[in-house]
Amino acid sequence: MTGSTMLLFASLQEKISACLIACFPRLFSPCFYGLNINLYNLEMQNFKYICMVLLGGAMYGTMSSFVKLSYSWGYNAAEISFAQAFLAALFLGTFQIAKPGKPTQIKLASKQIISLLIVGSTIGLTNFLYYLSVSYISASLAIVLLMQFTWFSLLLEWIAFRQKPGKLELLTVAFIVVGTVLAGDLVSGEILTLSWQGITLAIASSLTYSVYIIANSRIGKDVKWQSKSTLIMAGSALTILAINSKTIVSSNHFGYEFLLWALFLAVVGTTIPTALFAAGIHKIGASLSSILMTIEFPVAVLCASIILDEHISALQILGILLMITAIVAMNYYKSLETKNTE
Image (cartoon, rainbow, N blue to C red; front, side, top):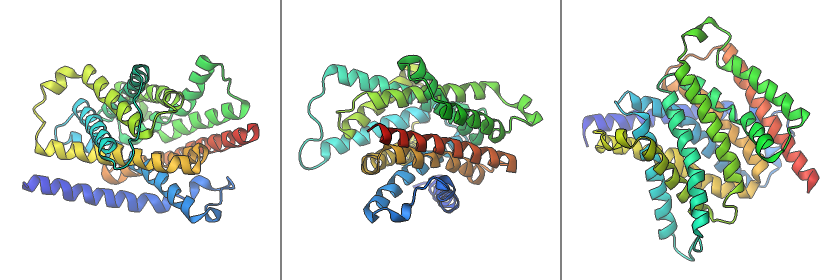
């Protein structure tokens, strides 16, 4: 193992530890204050699954900072996003085949396979556009813009499925927009110096992410998570390869150190969170899970500050808290509406 490779491992280990130590104590309690969700009253087994979902969301949140860090090693968004998706599909597929016991999935119809590959193409586009955006703008601004998927999803469901948002949802959207202006530091004069290409890419990733969330919630409901996740990641890798085939094929970065980066991003950013969500979400329910997964947002911002030394002002923190409160409140009241209709 070369000296630079050992340095890479040591640096990643140090930064991950610092990020998680700083994030978890600060972020758990504020997200649930005032929502009457008493975690202490839950059974110990449920608490375990809550921790799984939280950890999965937190691991997602670290990705933008580590991807931006990888750019300093000479890598680019195309090869990083492709390698991450390809290895994740490989790991998930291997797990499905090698898992002892009964087969995890009956034979899928070609229509199901194609549908899930298409769903994967949307998350592939999301990751590629998002990773590309952080090469132009700060990771903290990129995650703020990505979080616009919350109201993009409402808009798309209104257009595609005639599900008109209620007054409460429109109010939370207004708070999210105000929080975005503050969290993105868009009120300062520095907005004129920002890369509009990076901003456009981040907003585009938010739009494709909302498409992915809607499609993923409606397609493949009867498919086991191992098969579904494998096909989605395969679709993601194929889409990224199709868009960037020339860049990826001609890349001279596919060496040992790049493989270490790809393995780290695939395992920490995709494979483990996917398994944690699969194990935890169906145990505690989608409503509580959607609230818990908002931890991705503040973790991403804190990691950008810790790993990349990005400056976060008090006004930006206020905007972040406003956005988190609005998103959590919207998910919470959605869960109440679901319970009342059952």
